[in-house]
Image 1 (cartoon, rainbow, N blue to C red):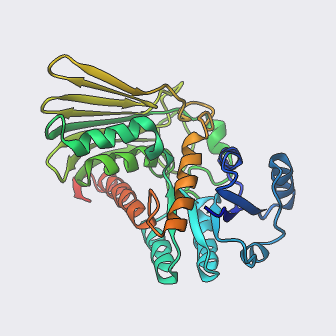
Image 2 (cartoon, helix red, strand yellow):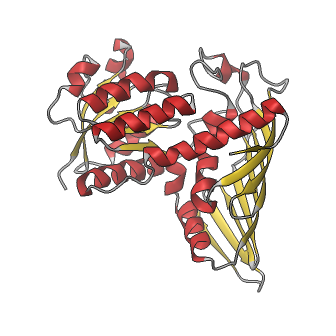
Length: 339
């Protein structure tokens, strides 16, 4: 396969993780340039990872060997950049969320579709071996119908994290724990169980943080397949523990915690898939491996070369945006709402 010429646009918090992932994809990816609006940051990042720096976004997009961009800016900067990339005929792999609002996220999806370029989203938790095994288990119906779902994200962020300009605000991030942290686990749940039909939620900011958006959400969930569920997501649970998903079936249960899946059957048998891995749930939000990012970038390159959709197409990612909207609306209005 001819290496995919890719440019890195934006050097957000996760940029070093992506750089380590790209370093293992020689022969699959060729990084054509790195662009950030901050010249000093751009030069330092390029030197640190041995990558070429691009003097401007326009110059990067004009490179005839550039086929796609890896978009790592904060959410509030994405729409204009995606529009420019799509206009130039470049494919886009973007960090989550697609944008701050579902309306803006939908606009990104539709402009890529109109331009005929592929849009993929970095929901790397889907690439974990344990998550893939869970998806296969549910798809196979080996444990019978799904009855109940429990989702917990007991994470921690110190106040210093929210003191960074724009963090935890609606103007830059689009919200708090839901759209910034829990979005990965919510996307994974939807990819495994199918859609949520109705939610009843509470949300707010605990006394442990000074921030505009929410750092705690609790909700009841009613899935379209008839299963019932619960969600607790917070960044106020010191010192932070791995997120978990518990699924109860007619013939047993499955628990995904961090990178490990444990399946327990009513007949007494059990199996374990995966291994313990950090997911950034504590004070260091970057305390996780780069393997999952590597695999989602490799899949994106293979999708471009083969003409198939990527692992997480942009339109699919709109589903988690709609779920987050419903949770926020339910908490705001104090009633159950349909998704």
